Image (cartoon, rainbow over all chains, first blue to last red; front, side, top):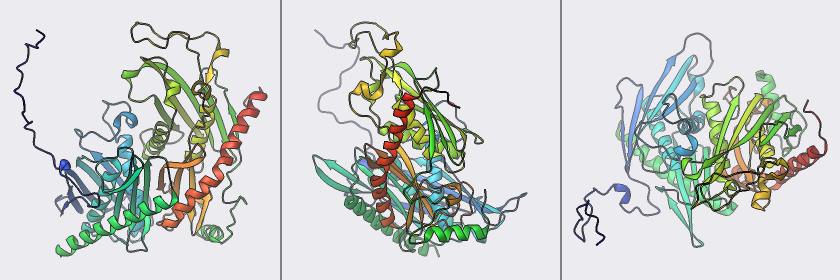
Length: 257
Length: 287
């Protein structure tokens, strides 16, 4: 008899008792994830925002405009620092983050996110209004259960709200849209605001929607067939998503008045 | 060199014209002239040195190591070292991320598989000795040359080592070593990344330092197997320029940038391949 006597074998037909995470709740392909926004939670920051998007949690605090000593600069300098909480695993960290174990400074993935955010946020801030000052954005990712590009899209939304909360003069609130083009057996389907990135073409676009839909941030990843028509369509989808998020953020900010 | 406001205005206006005039009289799709030398580091599997007319210089060395398949996350590791920048700075980390991302997603890893248990791992080390414009282009072109001329020693032991405890052994004769594309038996053109400047309604390839200072935005587009591929992203190419005219891009410009890369980048690859061929013929010094 070949029975494993070291274990107590469970009866048949049982179900696991783990709680179901909300990512397993079905989301329609055209839906945007539900979000919860709260501003001004961090007392010693000039402005902050906290966002829960499904089971992803992001917090952004803005310090500034703060005066700098020493050299004279005629406009504000912006710096962005993005951190994952130490217990959170980062997307693809095995490939991008070498010398694991040593924890000092930002990892390559965190640096990449920081510079995307900086690139996207910079055109919206009226830097000339703040000579001799710095504006610092501190982003903390408290929980992450989505793909890298999707996460960055939400970080942008969260950062924009934090900038508004800090009362920094901006041209427009930057919002992002992220869609995937998934190909299964030759059938293409567009998924708005996806959770995963399995073998699909991922498109993340950040917009200034008020200013003629100017694209301030762009990142395309994934499968390698780039058809102009398809890509155009996907970018337009991102614009739609970005507009929807923008109107929700507007509604939130107006309700805070 | 930082431009004065008047110089900046002049340059901006001449680049925004319907037929733009670039300071060095290049066409929009033209790269700056470069010179390069390959396979000059005796201790490396592949190497390349590339110099631009503006004084930018980059050396890439590729070394291989035999590793157990299960012990590594990735068979490629890129490291970038830039004169005057800390290794943990945002600038260097970003370049490293971009290069690693490009290569790990577009590489014939079959060429590195040795046996069922062992593989080659490639270490790609880039040193940028000097640069004026954003160094991604020179890093990626030098990496192209180095990968294209990388030779790996010939395996002489059994490929199937599932049952036996045997470490791979290689032919002593360096003449037996093979290029990456000889191992896979398919043509192999390593992927490259191209910087495209956006200004007004115009797009310019390979912007120089002066041009970077007046650009409205920058795009990074990848190119592999004769077509534009992902990753595609945008970024501010100038390091510490006046950010006054930095603004968003129109959707149509992104599409035309991809078309432009599709149309002209094969010529860049062709030029690099010709360079390697000519380099094989002359066996001289590098200086």
